[in-house]
Length: 429
Image (cartoon, rainbow, N blue to C red):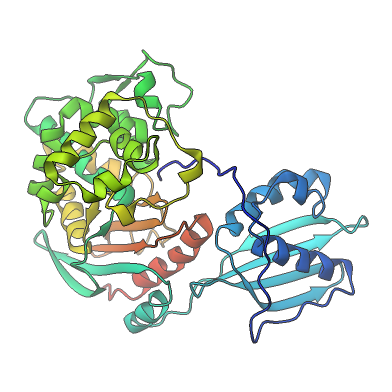
């Protein structure tokens, strides 16, 4: 995933009135009062904070509930789809604007404050590929998905929608960086044991795997490549792009089958794209309106400057300005198959790198190999897998979603229910 900094600004407080058909919450019990309080807080435009959560949850639950409520808050407004009240407990069933559900199970103690708070995300009901489109059409944004059988290295789609529509890739773009690394290894110009030097500049875009390491310390290419895929490490990604060179990644776009490599040329580093999309000064409109020469100049400008994140725009999607790495579902299938094809000889570690974190809970007896890459940027949630069933037949499954507003981890959890359904619909042997 791509790192985001918590938003600290706030706007005026407003709580939407109940929608027609919304279930009424009885507030005659402490658990009913707390359930209504949760709905009011989630539907407020005031961001979730520890001080307000102290009025809801017991002292030992404040930090946990604050984090959970913050994730939920970004998906407002909610309507109450159901409420089940028990002895000191309540199960609150919330409906989201994109057609999903979030359930909150609470328990109140003797103080009437919440001492148990559990969130679950029911999967949508999907029994056919037609149901997939029915569910995704309610998103209020753009989407593309594809399920393909891989035959002799070629993608043969069995289902999909908008498969040739270029949508944001988010961190799926890192598969092209890995392909470039593999090409350099096979050409003898790079070794998995070569080392990359951490710099203060490279750390500025965030590092989930190497955040405790200091500038000047070194990491091997193999480790960096692995964390770029499994942890979606931003710093490792830029260090690898710097190591192989921008042109190597642009060549990888062509060789791995991207439908329009010129659209991603010159290929932006994370430092550059983050600077344009979420940095200061705001360069998004210049990028949107610029031709190739002007965009190249913007990348050069961003590369020369320190990344200065603008906290007021952290959760604002930049893809409406064209600030993203774009690709189609067909592109995603081709790059996954290309990575498997190139994973031979000295590049054989690529297969293990892609499978280090499957990112989905599937029966290992049915799916003994799963290569995965997903992504998350404001407004953009993306998923992709190359999976081999028990007969050895490879499949590629992808889902791209794109909104003009921010959607967080809880939406991602709901979309995982869609992707699991896609796997269930595959006619495996």
